Figure 1 (spheres, rainbow, N blue to C red):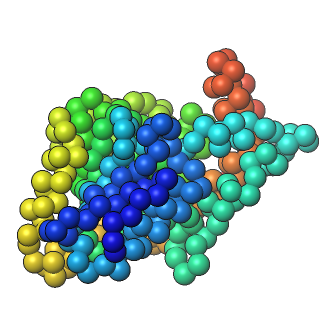
Figure 2: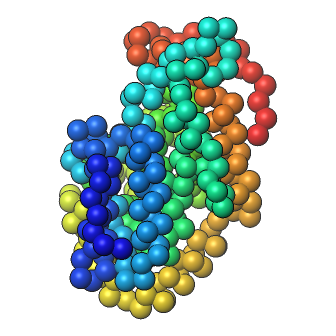
Length: 288
């Protein structure tokens, strides 16, 4: 793979085989839209096919790693259907594209934007500064190692919008922080600083300059046997992946489909933007 620059993701590969991958919407705090999901998935696939790449550093241009889903998407979610049931027509086709299963993959596009980094044979180090919120944090969780700034702000923010972590986040959270902490973070959506993220297991370590630290570590890894590095990642992933990974990812997709555009999900978004307490209806019966 050669160096590449798009309006969503940039890639620079140095002479040692370290790929410096950056989300490239700094004016939007690298918020996620359909084009960004696709760019992340395509970039990961291209790097996987390049045997000269030894390690990957994933970060965000500007002052934040990734602030989560683009606000335009949430504005669309606030448009309730006239009959008050089901998904709003204003959500549009792009939202459906994100949750549709990708051909030949166990993931939908939103999940693939994260899972592609776990699937990548090369080690991936996320360098997190500023915000990593919602889907942005889930992207960081797809990396093998996370180096965060002490002042970084991380959150499983989906609950604010009446949603669930649906980009492989449910499995990653339990794997990294355990069942009870995963539930507390998911149920509350509270902000976690860099130091606490390390204590909880969301992050590997802190650094004042996460990208510089990640590039240094990637350079060290790139100097090791690429065969041994790839074998180690494959074995360690196998040791920690659940026995029904495909089923878990499908359950995430189904949960999102059931929630997105439902009356309570619309109310969560509307009440946030209208700066008022939400008035939720009694929950509907749901099945995975």
